[in-house]
Image 1 (tube, rainbow, N blue to C red):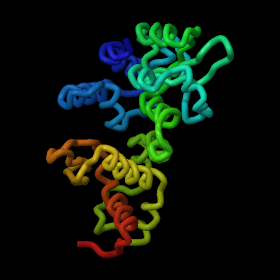
Image 2 (cartoon, rainbow, N blue to C red; image 1 turned 180 degrees about the horizontal axis):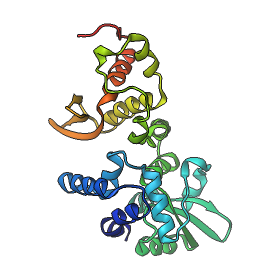
Image 3 (tube, one colour; image 1 turned 90 degrees about the vertical axis):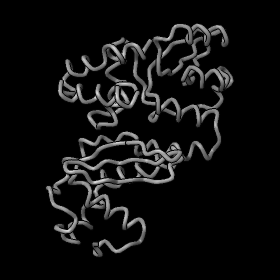
Length: 262
């Protein structure tokens, strides 16, 4: 099963292939343990690599073809082969049928019970390929769900591949908001990574039904937390030097004057 593969081998695999360092792995393992989450999700939240990169690496290691579902045309008529309850149960979507074989994208193609059930239900030969969990979820919503859900997932898809590491490449330095000129702030808030980052924070807060978004400056980083059901949950940590452009971006979205500082 893929879950066991991720738990036991993913970290060492990423270190071996030099996608992350040993120190980053240790930090991710600690985060996964403290927050009771899967290692792959902890690695993505820390911004070391993207979900897509993780699944591409796993697919290559396991010998499966990886499919980027955002780059193929999903056909709703294929839903006739796989009921929505089965698709949701096994995180699987049909993506191609050639008259003899049904190609199914799955989060976990190692789940032989799921593959056997799909073959039994469809009466067809089934070929499995691998796709990311978020892509599978969006595909299920598009094929089986409402137009509103599909539209929301299109927005999510456009920001889901943010890698916090790329944000560190912005030439901002370690200045506080008060030390950066208004002209420089205006230039920075239009940088694509900043726009995507703020969009991601807001969109996922709505998706998670959060009542508050807390953007908290710490000595060396910025912690983003959502309040859900009265409890604050840490969502991500980002470099401290991105605080000023983030705040300014939010001000612009709120029609506030970024030149006014308190």
